[in-house]
Image: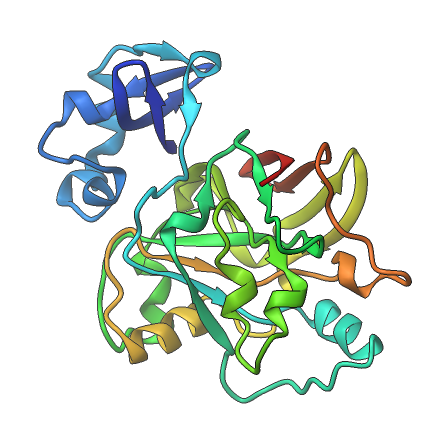
Length: 286
């Protein structure tokens, strides 16, 4: 099942995609004001039955996509978590080692944008770079989640483009400065439940800029697996329904080119992941 958050003239809501139409579950199930509330409930197990009982209210072409989880408590992003990207970074002269523990940082929810919404190149930098990533959405929260049970806590998978302002990312040893600008976190277009994903460790990922393939890899290149990331994050803090874990990006980012290539206003970035779909965003100037 594909679940999404969206807005219409009537306001924000959430629902399911059925063919080319949207079933508005936010209005049919007012006890769940947001998608995060629903995926954390017992009714999530009855999602097929609940969707079948509601008539579609809009066509996909008539709605505006919001970030899949518009206001998650946490967006946890893994750093250098693809082996090919690790080698790519080292080749540029950066001193990088594969660490014993997953390197992570937090992104604020206000940095997010939905499918088709513009990515904003900030006025203080022209070093805007793409990073297509598989996103994991937590459905069942917990603390100290064991790796062998971690996938039981996943509500579904989506696409994240961890767009980076590279020069600000390198202001200090921490990188969050370049990872939290407004309008730099595309997330969407929807969440796909695990039953329709198959093996999340073998998903093809491709990022295109203006139709040109810039990243082409698959999730088998992850250094730290999805269960390991969930286990590690849940050791630090409580994971709650709606939390997002962006699992890292593969090789093919712009800063590693010689000379570097960065996004500019008018560009269109598409991230496609097998069994999920395409996240598409144009680039505009602040």
